[in-house]
Length: 221
Image (cartoon, rainbow, N blue to C red; front, side, top):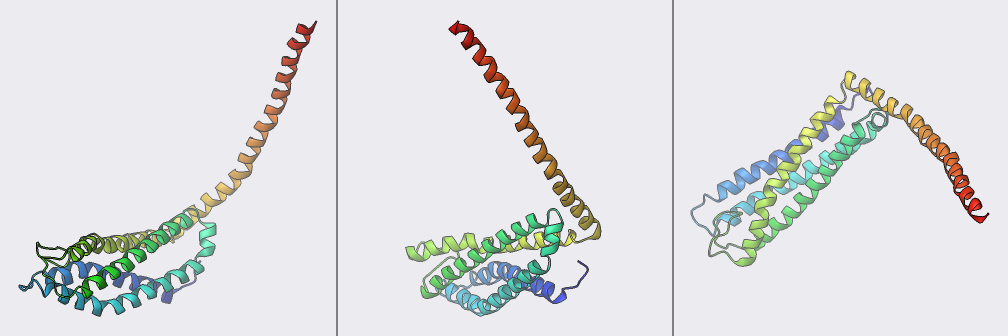
């Protein structure tokens, strides 16, 4: 547990930082700046060009983050088994990562659809106006929600990562290992109690059957 994995942690953290920061900057900076262009037919092309330049960097950042995350998962697997609570937070982190990947991928597909739409008049990158074609307007409304979902999910990943870092403090590790050991010790006792209850119910059931037979026998007489 005392071994260092600086390279893996750096890949994990730098990739996640670029993923989170790029999505937030894109929603606020790229989309926001494009909406200020006077010519409404130039707003989508300008924003699409900005996102297209960022996409390869974002893909590299996500790949770097995932490589670091998988490496950390492998190296920390013994602690996950020994320390209570670590496995649960790893499951939460995995779910957030899958969600962020799904939303990022779908957002990119929507962005490509908007890029192929040409130069329709729009109010903003994610806001149509009365002249915007219906299919473009529908895509924009979806993008308006998803542009904030990516930084929200990746921001949650940053918080979960910070919490898991706290779990690695010596005091947290010690208490977590005691908690896991206590749970394992309590398991045989619980099984014994259940078995004892079953054994106790057996004689009680037999006694009940005997009592039920006696009135039947007396009724026969």
